[in-house]
Length: 72
Image 1 (tube, rainbow, N blue to C red):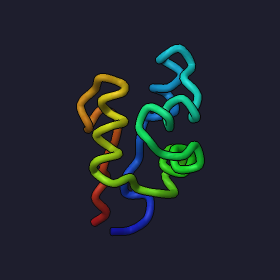
Image 2: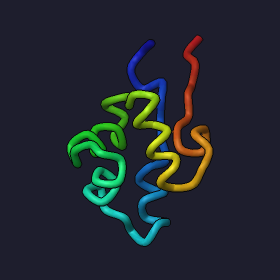
Image 3: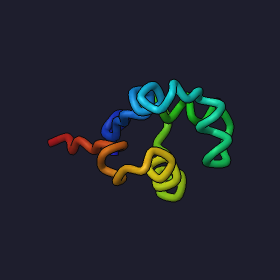
């Protein structure tokens, strides 16, 4: 898979949820703030478990948080 195929709406969702910080999200899902920062910047694709935990924090389906673009 090429880099950047998975994008996300985490930054927007954090701001829509009382301006949740990266640190607060990290604590809720059990990862470091640096991990949240890398996922948010599309520099790192989370494991399925972490992706589902993030979606659960925002009470949204996975595809509302993460988007996958297939490159032809």
